[in-house]
Amino acid sequence: MNRAELLLRLQEVQNLPQMQGRNIRSIASILSTEALQKHVEVCEAQARKSETKQ
Image 1 (cartoon, rainbow, N blue to C red):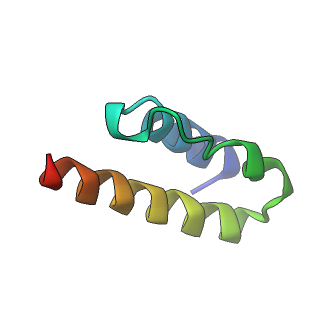
Image 2 (image 1 turned 180 degrees about the horizontal axis):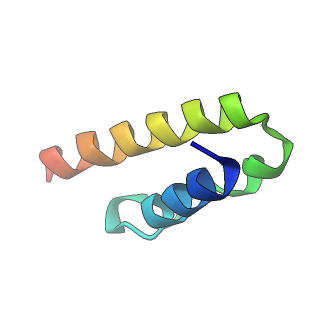
């Protein structure tokens, strides 16, 4: 997956109600593509986890 696709996925996660008030995108500019992919995966997992709690 390329960097642009990862940034789009991260933007989608940022827009989820359970991620409102959290800034998960600002770090993206300093991460390598591999680290960005891991960050996106962790954020998506956290959003799913928060979704099931509600």
